[in-house]
Amino acid sequence: MNLREKCPIIHFGDLGDERGKLVVIESGQAIPFEIKRVFYIYDSDATVVRGQHANRQSEFVLINVAGSSKVRISDGEEEIVVELNRPMTGVYIPRMIWKDMYDFSEDSILLVLASTHYDGAEYIRSYEEYLKEVKGK
Image 1 (cartoon, helix red, strand yellow):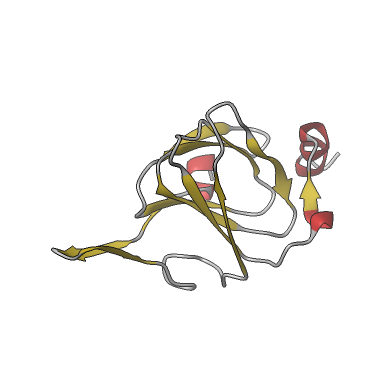
Image 2 (tube, rainbow, N blue to C red):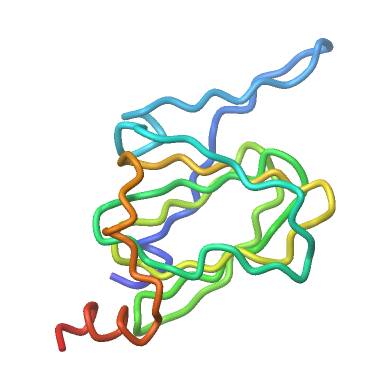
């Protein structure tokens, strides 16, 4: 399975009429896990790089609900960049995938849905350590 298959783009329903738009996000529907934690990143500028880690247990869906940002994703073999710039589109990040978020627009709000509660011990913050773990060395 290649990295784009491991980390697919998810399209959410975009409902709307003359009153405005509505995007529905539900656990077990478009989101392939039960949502246990929600956080968002805002007021970052284009020079800031966020993330820079992998998670041993957590899965994520990242959605730019306003503005845009880029996500660099790596599994230790392959690397792709996904641009998030529509509130009805997200990217799924499974466990043990390295991620960097960057190139935030001035109005960017990056919403993150997580499958676990926060546990700092499950984070791998060194890319070299990540490569050792992911390659089983």
